[in-house]
Image 1: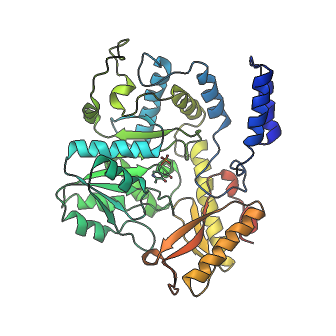
Image 2: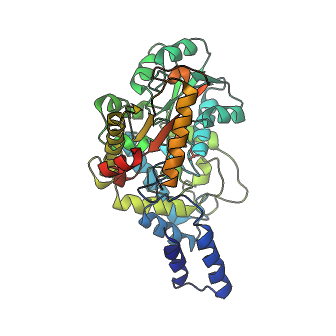
Image 3: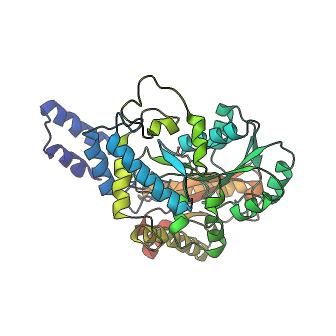
Length: 418
Ligand SMILES: Cc1ncc(COP(=O)(O)O)c(C=O)c1O
């Protein structure tokens, strides 16, 4: 959004005095100190511009400023949140589920691990070395033991290592990441479910990033895992990643609604206005913006979660963008890993890790100067698919997250890689 565009917001018909307008002018200027997240040229981190409808609905709701903690504070938006959770549950394939929105993926995953611990007090958290750092961190917060499971060279959880570890722990919750933060890799849910025939453990899916790809056109080998999402005990999906929402919107779903009993608490202040469920009764956070559910609900009216619908086609564009960039990178002589979702990594070729990392960093900086914004990723020796000599502990490669439909553009890949 340009400075002029941001500045023009001050002319909206609001009761703003001269001081307010001056402050907003200054804010519009200060907000320019950002990368151009909403442009095609930004293909770095997992940042996707919210849809204008979501922004409008969010803003509209702030004039009421509902709080979805209790029906006392947010009757209308709590009802919207229940509709949203029903749709997300249906997309996953849950027959009946219990869930709510959160401030983001970290909070949603914390709740999922907490519920796992309430179910099995001695559960060890098992997550792959490519899982988001939040899992080991939140295990620490919850006082749960954590073990890291190795990944294969392609970045997915190594099922043999999982079995080796799971056979030794008393009780476990396995975190299955569907869309890892670094590579967008999908852990082998189908094989992990098979292991449940020999060992008893709980499954939590962290689909904060990849969850919406459930309704996209995935390769068969990826799709077979997404088809089984409904078998997991809990799922996390972040609408503020691929769901076109402003930040502050994650979601957790529990397959067994009875697990809502763990949240039971007394509140001397709230829950008086209705005998119906207050979302705060099944949430760890207290106050939550009803505006977040208004924005997501509005977005889902325009973009229902349907296979083949407009929303899923937008996701398909991202899948095609990552595959296209990958092929273009290989054809231009880079190493590149075949993407599973919409994240593509590539690297200059060379002999030694240190020298290649330097080249990749220089490429990243040169591109930023040209106005094309990418990201970097550190890869360890055991996860590196390319033959090289290891004079440093890690290899730094270029990472690109292709979340916007306009990233599916051969001319853009060419500019990005030149
Ligand atoms: C797979 C995964 N899980 C969890 C998180 C944390 O989510 P949030 O940043 O919304 O707290 C992320 C963030 O990138 C993620 O990619």
